Each structure stands twice: as structure tokens, then as C-alpha cells.
Image (cartoon, rainbow, N blue to C red; front, side):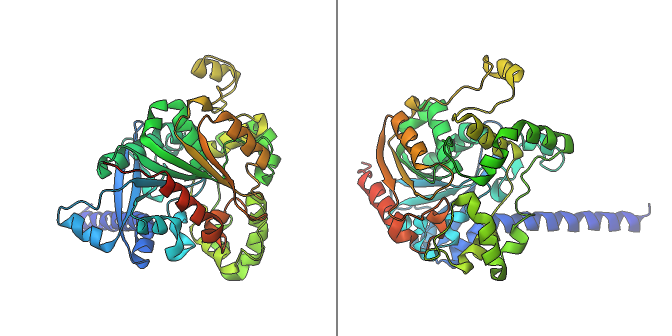
Length: 404
């Protein structure tokens, strides 16, 4: 190859690299762009888990606070709040639907230090210190919800506390963010003392009575699904490829909402708007590991909130027993409040009752006062602020104390 050929090859490599980096940066900056469009300032921070995943956290500041930080002054001392999203979701969900009435912005205006977490595999957390997700996807995506609770949440909690110079934080988790909090607090009980209050909504940890169509149709055949996924090399859940590219257009919103309703609980037409459904599919679903879905199917099939089931022989090697160990919620000593909808098809009212019986420090068990409120309405309901946010904010303020 001549000099020209070498230069041409080098140029192509540089261009491809630049395009890849730009695309990754654009994905990471979707949240930052949304924050800026709402009149606030966003920051992207990174932390590393004990098993090597590089996680992105978005911090929201008022413009004057951003200016203060640039002049080496810290923002006003206040409690930080860490938001953690659900399955096949990311940080953008918290601020995408309600504009300035989004819960993180409302809490920012109340004087709290707001952080949006992104678990491994999402757009802002798609890196690892030693594993390339493209060259070794099997290893990169070898993660269930246990690893998210055991590694990701502690890494985010520690980073937020260190950066904000605080001893405790408020935690707000939806769906998978509820289950992974219970995993962290039960498996690593030392983290309970770092939580001022956990506010958990749309629970997904207890599924014995679930009406979710995916769990009901696939729960009993998870071993076959696991084997099939391994044989064909399917490491992630094919979500966005099936729905996102079409359903993000309002013209398809009616059909898409009918396809989506069985996964969340049927929407109330008074609370659901076609534009909101289209907006959902602009950002949902994002990539998640097949192992995360399998973990949920296993928990539904067994009716037990427990660790990943590798089969009797592998369980014996990994856990020392033939069945996966159950998460001991007696270890969850941090104060916990629950917000849930009667029409949520994931954890049903009887499941919430079971959670309440197990948790030693549930300070609030709040059913949202709307019979049709479903799993995703915390984000999408037209009256989410009135139905849910106002009570959530009131609860957080009530559990706030002078930091001095």
C-alpha cells in the first residue's frame, strides 16, 4: 500500500471513529439537551462500579448554581436526591413527559440537589473498563437485576454523596429501580445508613399476583427462552427495534398504546394523550440484557423475590444451595415509602401487601387516588403532578432535617 493508500485508510479510520464518538455523545447528551431546553443546566458525571462498568449520572442545576460551580463555589448545602429508572429505560424518562412539572424539576425548585442515574447498558452507561460491548457482548451483557442492585446503585450512591459532601441522600426509584433498591439494601445493609428516605413507585420486586402479559405468557418457559437466547447469541431484549422506530409517530399512537397497555395496565383515556404515547416511544425502550428479563420471569414463575436461578447444579456451585437465595427484606432498615397504582399490572395490591409485611421500616404505603393509575402513569398521566408528585414532594420534605 502506497503513501496515498495509507493516508486514505487513516482518514477513513478517523472519520469512522469521529462518527461513532459523535453518535455516542449525542445519545449521552439527550438528557443534557432536555435539561437545557427546560431552562436548567445539566452536567454529566461518571463513576465506576466494583465490577468495572462506567456509569453516567446527570446532575441538574439552576443556571446561577452552574455559574457558582464554575467560580469554584459550591451550590447551596442541601440533601441530594438520586433518581433511578426502570427496566429498558434511562434517566431521560424522569424529565421527558411533564416538562417543568417533572418531579426532578419540582424538587430542584424546592432546594434539593437532583441527580439522575443510568444503570449499566443504557446510553450514558455503555462502557466498561476492560470489556468492549461490541467485541464481547456476551460478557458485557452478563448481568441480571442483582448486579444492578449490588454494584450499580452503591457506586452511584457513593459518588453522589462524595460529590455533594453529604452523609445521606433521598432515593427515588421506579419499577426496576424499586427492586434494585431492595437488592442493595438487603444484600449490602451498610448502605441503609446512607439513605434518608427511599421513595419507591410502580413496584416490580414482588410478582406473585402480576397480570403482566409478558410475565404470564413467558414465565413458565424461561428455561427454554434462556437456552434459545444462548444458542442464537441473543444477549439483549429486542425492544426498540420492534416498537420504537414506528411508535414514536403520533399517527400510530392509538395502535401502539393498545400494544403497550398489557405491559403496564390499561390507561384511562382521560389521563392518556396520543402525543404522550408518541413521546414515550421517542425514548423507550432502550437496550437491556436478556438476563434482566429472565430474572423477572424467574421471580414471577417462583413467586419469590430472589437471586438469579442458574439451575440446581450451578446454584449449588454459586450459592451453596440448589435454589437461589431469597432477598431478606428484614435487612432493609432505611425508611421506605411506597407509591403505587391500583391498575398497575406488575405488582398487584396483594403483592404490595406482601412487601409491607416484610419491610421493617415502611413509613408510608400510598395508593394513588385514581383507579386507572398504571405502572408508567407516574411519568405519563396528564395529572401526574396532582395525583402523585405533590404527595411525593410532601413526603420528602417531611423527612428532610437540618443537615447541620
